[in-house]
Image (cartoon, rainbow, N blue to C red; front, top):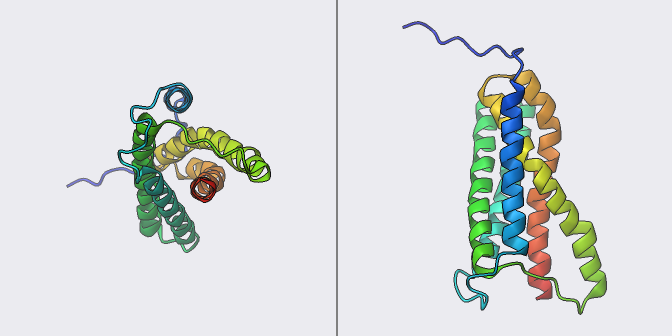
Length: 186
């Protein structure tokens, strides 16, 4: 049986693929913005699937753990363990997205109470806005980084992963903090 040739790592990724990933990410981000800010909740009373916000926080925490493990494994040159950790991070992030969409379809947006102005300022301007902005930026970066890895373009994968990793990690950790602050001040 002939050996399968490895992809040429110096091959330039077609810009149409990168543009398609960015376009899909933009459409997904617009959909999520509409869902969170304009779509009326189906269960405004919040009586169904009330565990979803906690599940989202757990999935974000798991993603952060898998990202840190993946980073550690690549530093130790444990490629298979790195790949497995990154696939696990991608899987729990995908599950997070499904639960996040379900939560917002059902319950709509959760507002931070106005009774705590200092905490609200920190929540909105220091935590939530960077979290949202970086989540929008992270989506195409994650998809492109995975694409580069899966197609064997490891030098380009490494270059982009240096930026993708800290942004993805920040989004995952700040997602847990967003949940914790909302839960604490509810």
